[in-house]
Length: 440
View 1: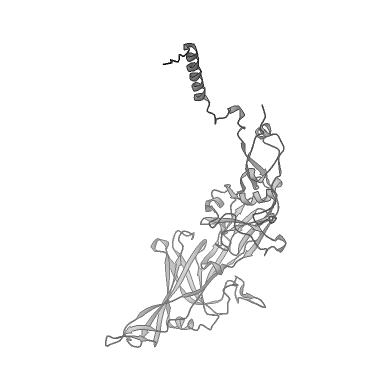
View 2: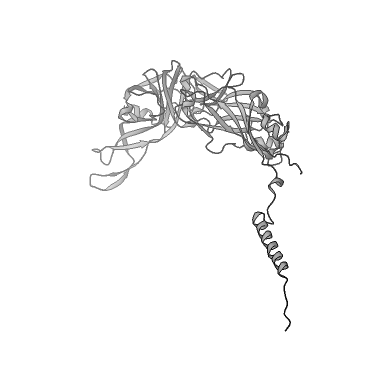
């Protein structure tokens, strides 16, 4: 047998080297990097650009949509010392048949109906209405032809080649059909009783002048009419001792008001009925010259790249809307690209930059809490401007329309400070820029 011997000194050296290697592996794995070789973390900064450095050509346009598109009404009597408003309604065809149990107890259809009276009920939005106590309302019958889509305080009809004024401004005159008192503490509706003669006067659906006018006689209030209902008291021929209550659908509703506000001499206006839009041109900054921490890290000026843009918003500051048109409910703001500014005020618009609900703003921002900053995000659009091309490969338009999500949505509108004021809109820009890597 041959026995191999091992040099003890060499064996000790081997184990010593193995221990050193193991310790080294514990401190630095083959896949790790020297921290000094990692690139420095990018720097993120928030920048604010004043109006003069990002926007121009502000213009306010009105007349979008008509009050009839709301499907609601407004009543006002010198509200805020200025606003008067009345609601006009037209009802559909009366029911012509009803199932009746005759004197023998058999249920049969009866198309020989006698209308012996009825009632008109108006339902109110108690939150949007400004009264906190009883108010007196009046109901009247319209006496001349009117067009629901174009009716105004002055005009009964204002269509192509047909412009007819009311005999009296404010949808008048009317036949007096009585008054009623609405107390919001007792419910959200008010009822006017009408006789058979009034019911008969509204039965002819071919009469384009038929309809009713609602007005508030109490001064200093503005009321929101959600809807109305015509309920008919009917005596069927098969059982003349009984009375049926039939409902006639509300066919058309609109409101007329005076005065219609003038375009703002300065500032931004959004919403209303008809609706207002504010148009402005946008120019994204291409070279960034600050702040100092950015310049110290990457050097200035910084040439902006679309991939470095994290967030962009136009920041508006709310101002008090004139009292007669102050919002009483949340305002939904929208922003859309203007595809052909030369065609304003009827220029085509692109898709919303804010989505279905838009930017929600509390009504207090235009009253007691005026001066609130409202961010309107435009990040993807701004990235396209920096890049010079949109997702379809087209040059993005430079004009934007600030507007309400739905047009129209309410008689009230939102107001913001415009250029030339100490609270002019500014551009909020958040960017992340990589620091330069220095070789050792």
